[in-house]
Amino acid sequence: MFKQKKLVVSHAPFWHNGTRITERNRTIMAAALPAVLMGVIQFGIPALAVIAMAISTAILWELLFNKVMKAAPTIGDNHAALIGLLVGMMLPAGVPWWTVVIGTLIAIGLGKIIFGGIGASPFHPAVVTLVMLSLSWRQIVDFDTALVNIHLSFPALNPLVLLKQVGPTAVDRFSSFDLLMGRQVGGIGSTFGLGLIAGGIYLMARRITQWQVPVSFIVGMAVTAGIFHMAHPDVYAGPVFHLLTGYSLIGAFFLATDDGTSPVNHLPMLLYGAGIGIMTILIRNIGKYPDGVLLAILIMNAINPLLDMIRPKALGKVS
Image (tube, one colour):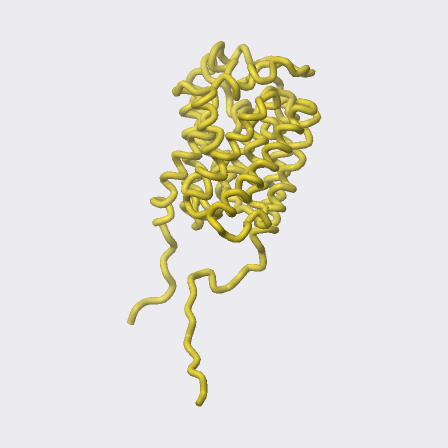
């Protein structure tokens, strides 16, 4: 007798585009490397220690969760390493070691594994981590406090905090070039604007990320900041200052573009990125927190399923 052949139907995508998760994550980490290296140069050995501990503990936490759930090891896809790297890039150099360990536990356990693993998280794991650490131990992850014992060759003041407390005249000491080159207090890998921009362009050129989210993010932030600045220049800083400080550029190119937490269609991506940029400036100028990038990303992560309902018109018609 002949064996009966059955038609097996699987879920989309049906046509693989040739990229692999491992390769994508490795490419993103390579794109972030210039910003990380500059952070180590600016903040010294403590910065290198934080980055190394963040990556290694994120990998160990994921391996531990795999063992507990009796699942096959997933650390080979480099996603845990990428999450650890992003967490380390947003932390200050002088943060205590236990903060890094707890942070990566939050990122892997609460930000990823609890939702089903890679691609299933509704919120970006690294962003969830930094927000929870900031709410739990605000002084420990505060840039000015954490870097007080680290020798710096530039003013050891957080530009966004100074803007919030004093006003635009107080941040005139920070030139746009210095901010672009990372000569400012901030996260280890989030201050070197030139490196983050170069890494983002590289990812878009390789088609690892789509241009719609970062471009609309930057445009939304610049336009909103420009409106505030034109209305009250003695109260609100200009667009360039906002784009080059805080988590703006790492948010635009490495956080908001996450595949699992951002839309997949063109118009939703534009709305998603613009929404993050607009809300960032609203939080900075009207809200309590000096930097609103992470909160804006979490808000738009929650809105993402609604935005994804805006879909292109299907080809063909039912006869």
